[in-house]
Length: 350
Image (cartoon, rainbow, N blue to C red; front, side, top):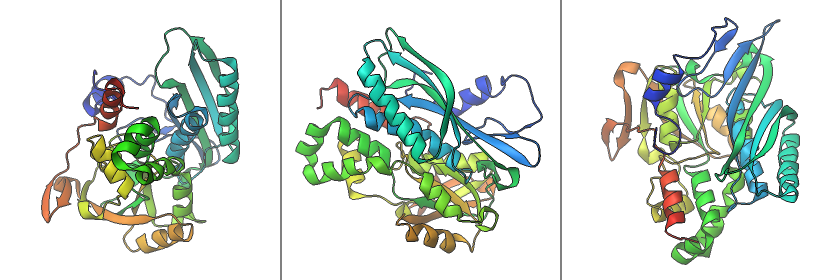
């Protein structure tokens, strides 16, 4: 519990999953490892998908950027269903020193980003708290409603599905590290890498990735499941998708898409870009034979997408093929980004 980042898989299953309140039959998809959304059955063949996440308030990034992360990191979760979020609830626990002017600016950006992807803000709670000095400013919940048969969930991925990854590894980690420590990154890596790193920030939304991937007919897209990349990076997300769907996986390391800025920034901070927070990328499981159609739909919208492996029978385990050698994929649940960020902060990197 003392490790930074999300709690460990075994702690989640032993402490939280066994104690989830009353068992209501209309909850067709509840909490689980690698599960992005809950699905609650509604009348007339409809269902509601819902997801929650912390809200960001990161002074080194700025109010606009913090608001962007607050909205889009949740919206990415809902987009894994193949649908956009429709409604939002926000709980804001703000530091006592946060000024009224800054709050108005921050909230106006929350409003603006919700409006541009057609999310109605329906309520929540707002307050100021003494001693609240973290980069987390509370939490939010997004929901959407769609025909139940049209809602994708991660546990529905199947053995034999091809695994796709949109964009590249370590998008959000690299962007936030570059923007948070600009002087160090410029001095060590040069202005071009710094600019490229900062330029990744507004690629941290994978909402369009998901919606373009499924196209106009979700049931004939060939896609069985999607999972957005967050803590644990691209490899962690594939591991989670395999566990959630009770499959194994075979991942080709050389096929993992990696940008030069991410390589250099992650190397500077001594972290592996394959395993660190990668918001902006989407893992897509697609029936064999449909992968080219999905890739072509994304390409038409200038969204890069690569084939990186396939799901296998559970008994085969989750394997990483690197330099022609097959090994068990390592998964600790601990994202190296957090330690890298706070170590740099403590060491006075600017």
